[in-house]
Image (cartoon, rainbow, N blue to C red; front, side):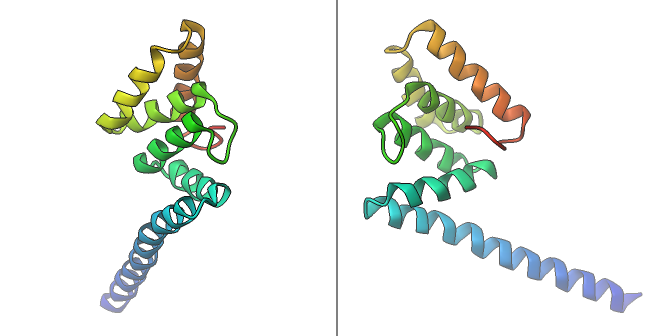
Length: 128
């Protein structure tokens, strides 16, 4: 019994170690791509992290949509991503979202909020 428990504990520790390294490397790769102007790669990695609930990636996607970096500039999606990041407690995302909303129609803000709610219901999968 103790041998089985030891194997399970080792397996869980190994899984944690592998996942921990993946989570710490991915944001670095995204920033390296972003800073070198490879917005397509950065966007791909940020989307992957955002789908895992990473609020920093969601914030960064908001920025990329707000400024049209690697995507067509889209205030609705910028607002949506910042709303998702703000839901996780990102105060900067909430500030940017609220600032952006001043330049959006009520219809656009409503659409962005609806998209954010759908995304939350789907647990961040298929949010675009």
